Image 1 (cartoon, rainbow, N blue to C red):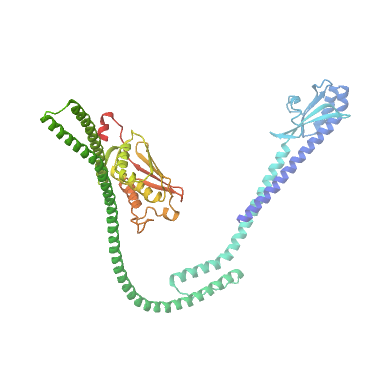
Image 2: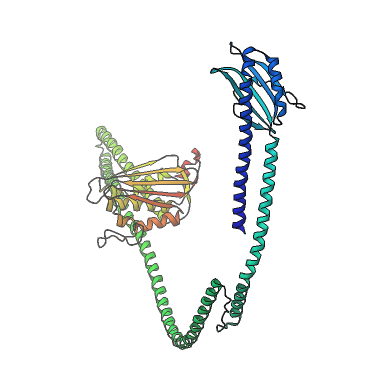
Length: 531
């Protein structure tokens, strides 16, 4: 029905459209013929300038039911156009002159139930005037309405006939199909695959019934084979369940052993990380102790010399042999020795203070307020015993007024591990390398640390596993492979931040560390407490 309806609608629409266009074209042709005839008949009147005579001639148009108004305009030699003659059908109101629309209605124009046209009147290839013709389009509308009504009537009649034929055909086809549906429903409820569909004489439905009966036959045979297979499967399941129980018990025992091994491995890993921290702190203690010995030894030497000179002066004073020149020399030497003692003791105090703060930071996980630039100075000072043995250059770019509240201990350990990693691995076989550390605040809530060196870089196969535990290129040479793993844990766990690496072999390495902080506005009265 849908296809039939669509086909009828399309064919009716095309036919109706063609008829309306034919009626329209016929009306336009008639109007153009009238305009051509009237224009030729008015040439002599235009040339003789006899407008009244032309008015009488145009009265013959009253015999036409089509034409309502006719205007004839005269074209003067000075290019002006004037009204010449007209015709108005009885009972039709005159229309105003269309001189200003001469170029707009050359082709027939249909609107509001009328059709208009303006054509030039020529004599010997010269335009002597223009003809305006206005005719009724009622006949076109009447023909159009009749065509639409006729097409709709035919369409409805055809659809009704098609619907009645469809109902009759539907009953002939659906009855056998309904019988087949009922058979399928009964088989699905009762699981009786021995039933068969009856043939009814319709070729296509008989083919469907035969295929359905064939399917029932195969299903019945399959169900019989399945019953036999299920019996065999039941026997196999009994033996299989016993095997599964045995395998499950063995798997539980293996899982228990694996969990214990994994716990021991985690405990060993934590112990190795702790040992790495303590080894780093131990190296720092030994280095600082050695560094402190130098100023203290110079102070001891200067104080010993002062004691010896003081004993000589006491003896000369008691023997009353003390001279003014000797006293003046003693005073000058005393000032010099005291200055030496003061400078070296002050140097030792600074080293001990820096080491004390670094050691406290490394063993503390608490937040404190600190100046980032001062923290970097303390870290580099604590590493001075190791750094002075190499010619590598370390540049720190950090604002002096960057004061934050965070965990200084993890930051301390991260910087030390990165510097030592560059010295041991990055600058291997290099006489002089360069490390650039840039620290800057990102807003009031985060700090970024960018650590770069110009060493030999990291190969791709190691770069992907650089933060995994026990990954090292110094296996068997004192390297534990826990340095960068410790850095990663400190950044991600202690500081709740992130760390990324960019490196190409032979082009150095760049670490970017980003972690949250609480930025503190620096008050001049509190600078000492921050430091």
